[in-house]
Length: 251
Image (cartoon, rainbow, N blue to C red; front, side, top):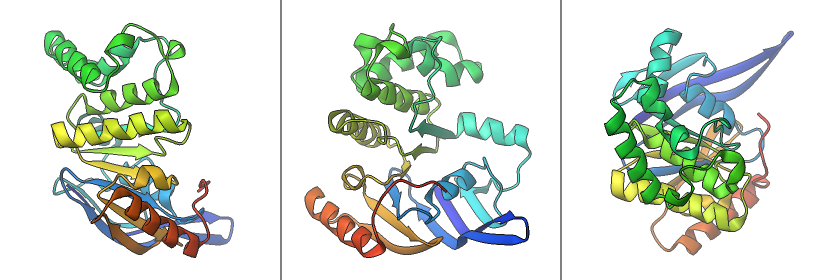
């Protein structure tokens, strides 16, 4: 579903160059829930921004469903972001002036889909993620967990090839974090959704099928969950301690 091949990204400040991503290659299969972890400065946030083409990379390929989206004109890329990519951000990015239901409908409003089809799908997603009781409320009136489940539902409205999630549990308490991870798992199980999540949260990552661990812009290791979630989290913590922690990034 997503293939990244030999991706490189360097930032330049004055006469100084700072390589952030170095010949990075990996893939995410359809229906897979994959996390990216690593210490601060490892390149996680830059990687996500390059995949979504919010920032340009220096060279390499980003293949989405077999097609290279690198270097497309912004107009075409905007259509791909609306139709083929779903986004979930740490700070929710909901529109305060729209209700929960209206926020969820927004991607199909932009895509000019039929109203009846749009509303039926939005109601289904509200039921699926347990937010049907707050459909008519506004973002300021609901909890952080409900806001993020709203964002997950919105991200799924156009049945994207993949959801790109940037620290989706970073602003949530443990109960809300579990509710959001459950929403991703439900989307994966019932809609065969593909999720690619950048996180520093070992608990959230322990629910994934696979975790790609970055160090200094390269892949340090990949871990696949074979046993229990608890065992997988212990494996993740061991690797992250070896690398020097799993604190927030500012990349």
